Image (cartoon, rainbow, N blue to C red):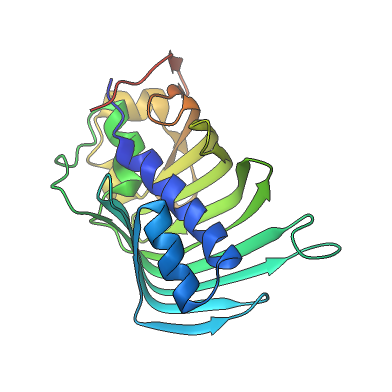
Length: 234
């Protein structure tokens, strides 16, 4: 089974971006950070840049090496802390009108394999009304809490952590498919893997761990649990 690195690369890029835009707020600092981190960061307007609120219109971020990233019509980032800055730091973010972007042509969308279902939320065809969540920098890790993405036909929730220095990932994903999308999934996969949700939606629970370029993947379904130690790179 092959799990496209687009999924993990976009998640990592988004998490690093949110932390970086807080720690390096301001037009010149964003430019410097982009150069140092191998990201292309562009935006139409920097509406606010302070320790309490950062807001963009027309934000686009692409990782140069892989040519993948995201574009959002609006982005708001709000940090908070319990005592003084950078102690117990929590960063909340809300992106609206979001789509994932790829410079290189992607593989055709498919719903007839487990890897296709797992990669589906990161296809560039979707426009998410909103992606919101919370991250907490903790040592070398970035902890992702309650990330939720919502569109008309597909939804995603993510909790986990990323250690970009060790290339280590631990993440739990739940992917939700609308009734319209479920019709494209083979009945045998639907019966075995997808759980019933409200209003005809179905869900798929996934656990990813290890090297974020070659993670192990565990898919839990109604009939069985699939555990693959290592997912090959494309």
